[in-house]
Image (cartoon, rainbow, N blue to C red; front, side):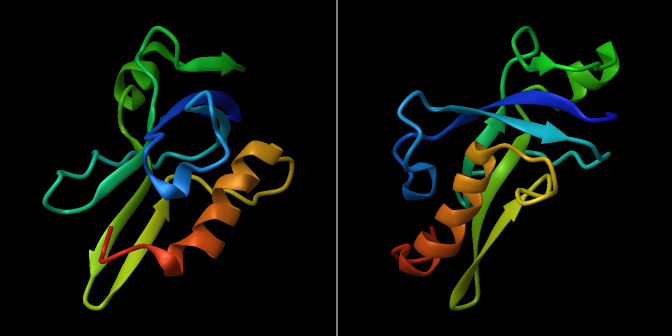
Length: 119
């Protein structure tokens, strides 16, 4: 995907999605990374790409990519030993990124250490 802007649906009840009352954010996607959503026993999917019909917000996206990315994980948190791993499918602080995705990054930095338990 050469720089398409895609819709991500957030888990509004998770602390890492704080500041997004609509429960959605548009993010810049410019890689080949695709992550399966985590199962509940492995971690939490804080953000997943939107459904196939509404995923593309701007730019060009092949139909095969649209089907592949729909409802896949974008923003995840998973316990690891005594800590946790917070992962993004794309760089949330890349140049020319939106302020909204920077808020996701700030949430991960500031709220990540305060998460209760592993999730």
